[in-house]
Amino acid sequence: MICPKCRHEKWTEDVCPNCGLDQKKALLEMAEFTRRLSRFAEASKLYDQFLQLVPGDLEAQKGKATCLYLEGLKDLDENKFQKADEAIIRALEKDWAWEKGHFSRVDLYFHFSKIETLKKEYEGIATRDENKKNICERILRIIQLTKKFHETPLVVQTEISGRYQEFGSFLKKYWIMIIGIPFLLGMIWGLAEMSRSVDENKKTMIVFMSFTLGLGLLMLFVANIVTLRKKSKQKTEKIDDNAKTN
Image (cartoon, rainbow, N blue to C red; front, side, top):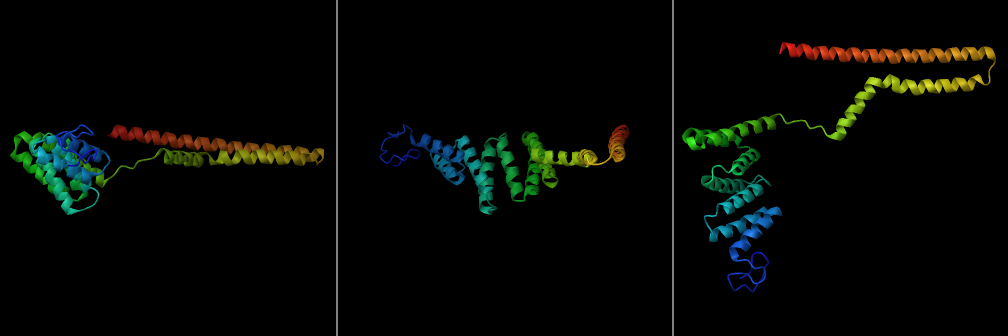
């Protein structure tokens, strides 16, 4: 016999002479190992082999059900859906408080567009069985919340996109200053260069022009700031009015 874990081929005793595990432990460890590697189909078969030796092991049943569920999510195969759902139900029949099993069914039914069927099933169980009512009501709330999420998914703003939006908003608010300051400095520099080659009367005119340009841009800056403050104040007043109304 070949050891399920280390693949030692000369295994004639109850315990593998190479890895020191018996057949049950070797199967269980390999099942959990392949499950961690996301080889769910292989892991479910190993769990199944273990359950043939230990039919009543609940943890192995849960492990197999979880692997079948994860394998079923890979594609919309109806056969895989049935196997996964049946395996989860068998585990839940022994442990109705197994939350992961309920959540897996919800996820599975959503992926296969059968959530309304599951909803009716839990509503029926809640009506018939008082002991299972609390958990059923909790799962029904989760189904409702999940439906809302699927219908109106949250818009997630990443850090990079958020920075781009903030930068765009800054440009929109202060574009006059951003463009005006370099323009003003350039004009002053150009006029200063021109003043070197002109007489005294023209120098006075150049100084006056520089002063006028600077004053005009300064007035634009002030007007821009005042406008932004008014908009901000109006927005704050609107929020306060809405809060008082509500």
